[in-house]
Length: 410
Image 1: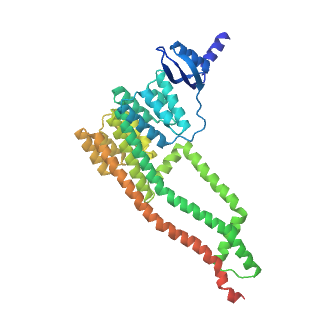
Image 2: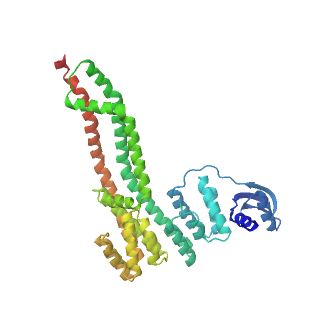
Image 3: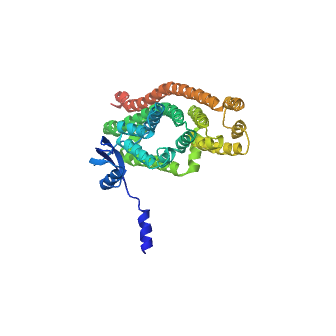
């Protein structure tokens, strides 16, 4: 029993906190800093063993804070790369970024990572402790940079990669957000008309015993449905959307079906395909230029493409490459990449400048996506305006049709 109790005690992980302290060091100089410990008493004892005479020690709190976004991580990577290139020590860089960040939650994350590094973990190991924020691509590149002694250069490439990926996502979101918002506003306007306006006219027509034209009768019937069953229909739609979202997260075959179908949608499918190729080639270029072997680099490339079709194809490409097939031939077998991509990849392999060629491909497709977004936005705007005019104008005309015939009714 005693042995079991001891083992159970060892499995309990003591929660540590961050303490800010001020005191006098061994040389009699004023000193201050931070230390992570289970309590202020433990922190004081640890500092005394280091020869520090404590004057003041306080527990640091990082209450609240907003959700950590990709933009925060990208900015952190750029800051860290810049400071390391300038010769600022690693731990001091974490301290500077953590103290200066406006989001307390992100500051807490950086101080936790700094604490792990202080206790002997490598930087890559510390990042791997937080997979929700730092994906395998990020951690693998950091590990490659640490091993090769070029961490600052790798972080700079990684920051550039993140900035490009973030810009690409922003362009796609901006292209899709505008029509979605306009359509939602239109649905809201139509709902108000159906719920508030049409019933007033319907009551007036009923009091007059008027024979309603077919378009007006259709609008009245729709209005009655919205008034009596609208809330249930709305709840059903919300439940369906949430259900599809949950099923999409949990079901890999359903995600694959959605990704495959999305690539076949006119206009949008072409844009998504170009975006996936841009992310795929840029990720592979970034990892290969950092010294990660090609087969290992392909582990992270598929997921970074953002599309299950390309992720699945990347697994086959990795298998072919690991058995001695060239990257170009493996990509040809995948039957997903345009001839221009294949030709430039082949030139890169033959010339020994694969990373440079892949970067040029990514830049080209980034521009293609940007142009596609601009073209789609220009195309969607008049289509949406015409659609709204037809829908709302049709409802208004249908309501006023009996009024136009009022003379005959009287």
